[in-house]
Length: 181
Ligand SMILES: [Fe+2]
Image 1: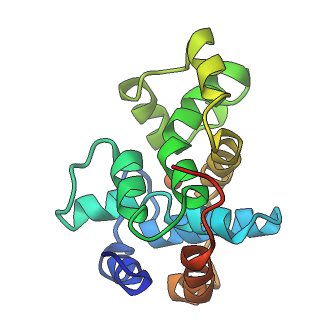
Image 2: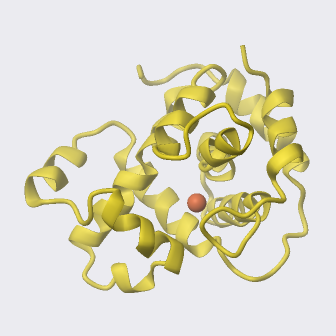
Image 3: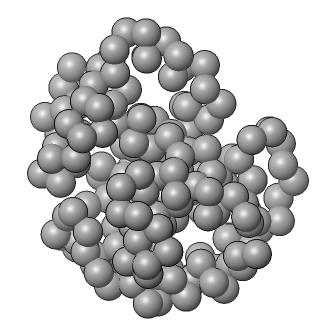
C-alpha cells in the first residue's frame, strides 16, 4: 500500500529530473498545483495537479514503463486517493487530445515536448471521441488540470516545496469517495 510519505519520497528522489521539457518534475508539479490553487480548486484537484505526472517519476524509479505515464500514475495513486484525484490524472493526456479538437488555438500554445508527444498519443480527438470523452467521469476536471499543466512550465522557481503539500495530500487521501472509479 502506498502512503503519502512514499509519494513524497518519490519526488525527493526524482523530482529534480527533467522529462520531455526543460523543467524539473517537482517544479512542474508545483507550478501546476499553484495554478489550481489560484483557481480555487478543491484539495482533490490540487493534489491531482501536483501529482499528475507521477507516472514519469515511477518510470525514473524503474517501477513502470515510460509510455502511458497518465495510466501508470493514476493506478499508483489509486492505492491512496479517490477518483476525484485519480480520474483527472488518468485523463490529462486525453484532455490534451480533446482540447486540440475543440479549441482551435490550443495546439499552438503547447510546449515543444507536448507537441512532440501529441502524435504518439493519437493526435486530436475525432468528433466521436470528443462526444465519448464528455461523458467520462472527471473529464471537466481533467480539462482544467490540462490547462494548468500547460501553464505550469515557466522558467521560474516556485517558493513552495512538494513537502509543503503534505497536509493537503493527507486530507485528499482521507476524503470520502464521492464517486465510484
Ligand atoms: Fe504535466
